[in-house]
View: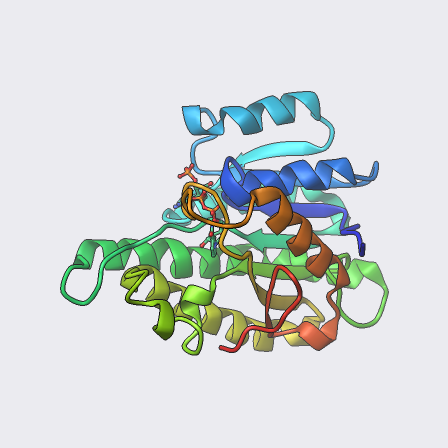
Length: 258
Ligand code: NDP
């Protein structure tokens, strides 16, 4: 298995679901140099208890940082704080994992839900990439190695087949999640355009679909457990090179059509 050896890693929505499982699995394989900035929107709230417990057990590896993807000020504040802790080595791996579901079809989806979903799933990650860009750039420069990898500097956007114009339509009647799907299609475009902007600095950027997973978002009927999905995603992330820059893969490494 290609291991994720990135030194400084930041994950959004790290308090539960796939984000929390990613932190847990990174810990199993963590080297002395590794540091995980586990971000969530309410670090002191009841939904972050499991993350707080984990951070208590691994105080030298995990730092919990407040980051609400809906709040540009909190994104800025988080970047300031992380920047002050990073030193010269920069941020190697940024995982844009946080997202919200928005359900309904053309007849039933609300304007409010549409706006909120777009805000969290597209504008939030865009501002996060913007604010953390200097630290990614610093990591790419500090690495001194050619090419691209997640151990050098990378943005991994946790997207969904829901945002695939090829894969989603046949599933839409069974899964009427119009606001979510539109937001993930926007997120996919953000990935492709960010990849163009980040290329000059050799910062890898791609979209990753975790599979249909049993989490609060995925629901009980999902066939995959978080453990299997995250094991697969970390394997894929660890093996990425410039060949996958600007691409869209799933947790098994299969290419997803846009
Ligand atoms: P969950 O609903 O279990 O967890 C979502 C996470 O996002 C929570 O940590 C939640 O925090 C956080 N979050 C939501 N809104 C915000 C916000 N405004 N700011 C910061 N954090 C926020 O989802 P999953 O773990 O299943 O999903 C993780 C990623 O995987 C998402 O991008 C999702 O779209 C994608 N995905 C998941 C699939 C699945 O089957 N599970 C399938 C395809 C894609 P809080 O506790 O504060 O609400």
